[in-house]
Amino acid sequence: WRVPRYVYLVEGDSRFLLDLEHPYFLRELRRTLRKQATDEDIILQEMLPDFEHLWLRDTHNAPYISELVIPLMPRQSAAIAENKQATGAQSKYCHRIVRQQERQQLPGGEWTSLKLYTAIKRQNDIIAGPMRDFVRSIQEQGLIDSWFFVRYVDPDPHLRIRFHASAPQCQDQLLITALAWGRTLVQDALVKRIGVDEYSREVERYGGPLALDAIERVFCASSHIASDILALYSTRQLTCDPIVTAVLSLDLFFETWGLTLEERLYRIQYWVEKDAYKDLFRPLRKLLCEFLAPWDTDDAIEVNRQRELLRNVANAQARTIRATARCIYELATSGDLWQSEDYILSSLAHMHLNRLQEMSQEQEKKAYACWKYTLESILSRQAADDRIVKN
Image (cartoon, rainbow, N blue to C red; front, side, top):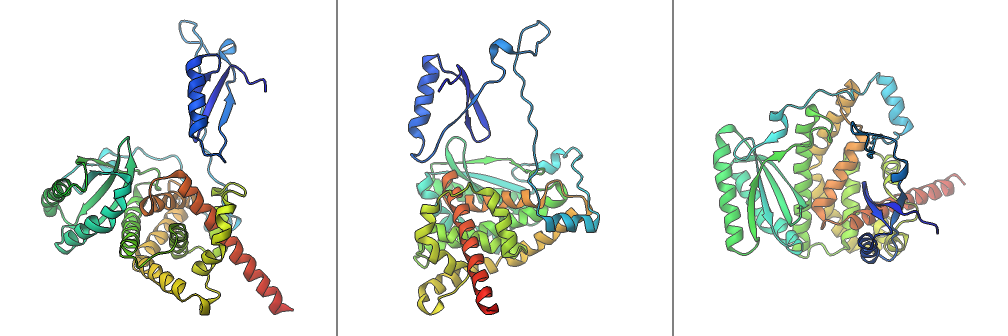
């Protein structure tokens, strides 16, 4: 009703300016509406000021648009805030410039990064099979001491696998061995093509240069967990709904990090829109609660078996996750952490789901929503039991 002529079409953190009196932009709006899910809205924002009222002028007195972006940090829990006050920690958000050698890792150096271009539907099979086998092989040869992978689309879907040489004298051989393996995958028609690229480390995103080595060890732990879980699916040892696996894997990760059930719920509630995906959660409620907090153990033999498989996979990487959590806490206490712990955890959760399931913002939202509702159900059940005991 009375929509202005100039509006922004908003998708996530990007905005596209539309002129609703121009046929091309109307077609673009129509395409966007058609590709949206039936239960999803599109967001239009009025252009303020519009072209007739722009007040910024360049040196030729021509008007132009300027956008000011102000990053906001998420509110932290009272317990965390009190702890920081008690320790006297102060965040150092005025950081030094990251040196090129800290950020840029070229192939054949400390890190070798390989791209495997393959169809999205084939990625899980490669992760669970050839990739997992190759990693085990070069670990046994002593060529690497760490590795991780990430799913990408830019624009073609591919896997980026990063290998960390165990010693300087292994760097050349690691590159040669990785390229030979990639060539075999192409010859076997498992991937369309391969590429070698630099690894640009996201230093600022993960808390700064003092945190990054520990964070990369968690990337490695997360990659082991994801590839082991996908291998269990490929051999039919795991048969539960992938949403259940995603929720339990996230919960085990955060539990191992050292967060209580209440602290986990506190963080996840800010990632989920009100009542989002409740229809998806309801039929899975009992199963999810049994996986995260066993209750009806006598009637859930198969659930118990699959839960133990997943717990064993997570437990194998628990030492690494705990050590990284301690490192992040110590850096935060000393004021040397460039991001909040909450922000780092949200990034780690996002990347863990990236490794565990096909790239999909909707699938990620579903996992977070089901996790939130499961934690709420477990806490409600515990509160009800406490009331019964007291009475």
